[in-house]
Image (tube, one colour):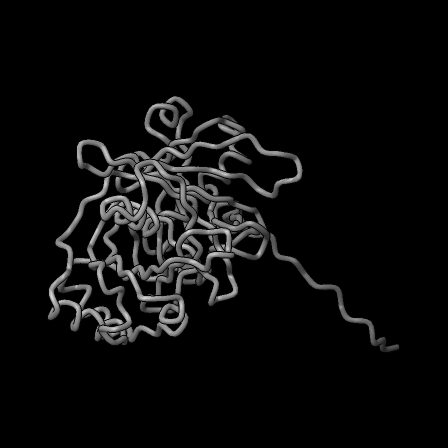
Length: 320
């Protein structure tokens, strides 16, 4: 006799070598489902470079990280080995993957769980993330990283530079902040920091990827990071957008380190002043990035970038 009840599904258990656990966290988020999402593969031993790149494409997030556990004594001395992949390539450093991965380790690592600081061994060298005690009613964990000291490219003041820059941004020269230059800055990844005239200009920013890429390649930058003062009632100091070839980033920690270096260098923020940058507003993924930098003997140093990381998912990926 037939029945309308569905047949029970058959679960095929994969062999151990082709199952990889991962977590997903929201970085620079004040609440779950905000900020910048990150996938973290918590034990990537056995994965090839090509497999990691394919997995990053599979997650389809802006970045995916892969942790390679080592002996505890090695991790204490050199840090936890982590590799960072975009959907298109591996990168030596990026802000929200660094903060998010260290925060996951703070919550889950068998030895370093709850530590005041955790060091990641990245392509740019060791980066340490420090954590502050959490209240029980706060989601996730708040961490702060010190980025590498910034390097500064030439400030783009000239009128012809501004015309070319505006065209690359799909804007007019009048849309740029009138008295501030654009400048290429790196703390591990190079960004062209571009001050815009207003929030209204930021709201209609629509970069054409091909035009932007030609200009960025010429000046030696990876991406644009466009900034403008935030709304006075927003509770934050600066508003930022980072559009790129595939779309837009809701929070960019590496660019935020470059931005605070720019603000301190040009007298728009005081040495060691704590400010907050908002990003992702237009994407409905609001992010808050806490930054500061010091000016010592006319050199910008002590670049700190922090924010909250909130776990939102976990799972397992199977490979053939």
